[in-house]
Image 1 (cartoon, chains in turn purple, orange):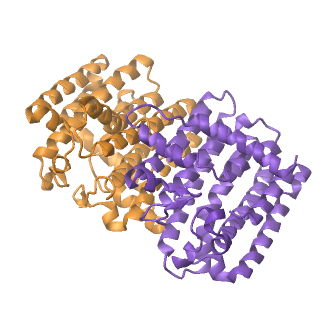
Image 2: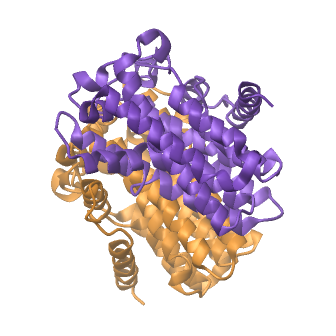
Length: 296
Length: 296
């Protein structure tokens, strides 16, 4: 199947699942559900859950095996964006062409809606584990991998380093560590957790890990490039914000052309890492190229 | 054993476990660990993990069965305090006689340290489940109960209602719903999760649930009374802050004497709910009395 068509198919499956998994309850805390949904259903590429499903396909398993975990990962990603956009962090007014959560619901509620999404991600995974009649151990392991990836040793740690680097010239190794944690960990999480649930062996998990690490890097480098080249209409946020915040990025460190060269190398390494899966891995390889070429 | 002595024994066991479970790593995100520890190790009554251990004792099980879950619950409680104290929420400068997290580390880091504590709570529970050689299903169920208690249907939902009620006269049923979620859910969580792990039957869980609901109510009523009666030296925060924020509380709704009468009734109901356990439940009954009588 053609890449775009398959991506759409995954996307539809994911959006339908997200639609069902988070329903607004008519209880006193209703606004919290609305704020959670506002950001969760704001669209976006859904690259993380798409990776979950693609890996599931690679192992010829039914999507129902991994969909709860895929939704949970998207919730964790969404909460991190809500908190990242807050005035005390990046202070962004727009995200995906829409007002950010705190601009609509106020700062207090945006913090709580973010907290609730992180918490709900675990609720959803645990419920899935309890209702599955098989494979409990593997599911708990997959959830453990996701939890580590989103925590202080992963995504949150990266955000802390990012916050502390603002307005400073930071060493390149710090930049690379920060990206590995902040963006990389939650790109790796869907790939590895899905592989664990689908019964991948150690060598397969290792290949997929390398693939995920490389596309995680590519994703961040491309983000930095887009921040310089993009504009509000395609990017949905003000471009150049990293430069104006005086942040170290791949483009400020290596120049625009240097960053593009690294992006190309890293993308090739990602593709090479999953050669062992043969033609079955075609879609995952295309994702790597898609990340490098995307315009928003 | 005398109540105070036994409480101290539990407290020591808990503080030692917390000390070990969250170690500051010498990595670029070091400050995040420090901010997490600053609030987690700030002392306090540790009433939630004490309840976990007391229920564990009731079923004559080893503390090692439940200690990870007890620590996780204290982490969730702590993160909720950090976020609650933020300028966009309660805007408190002091907590337990110390500067609040955001006053020491700044708002951005305080938000992330809170996020990290919530996430770490799940990391710790999952790790415990994966290393335990028995009882996996019951542990996952217990974690699921905790997750629901801390989420949008529980504690966070209560915080949302609290935030939305500020400066408004809210109906009493909203007040009671808010407390049930905001405070009650995370008092019930250690009692019920510990009972599940220790193999309690449905009727025992039901009795302990009622007990926990009642002491949760008592806890909140006492908090409202202390907010009127307490002062900075014993309470560790500015008293009268609810009144100055124009919040509906048990004391503004029922008057100080009315609130004290409700507190007495609810405490008696808590004690009555666990009569079925006989003298073994003496300590839990004493906790109910302790909550009603505490001065901070």
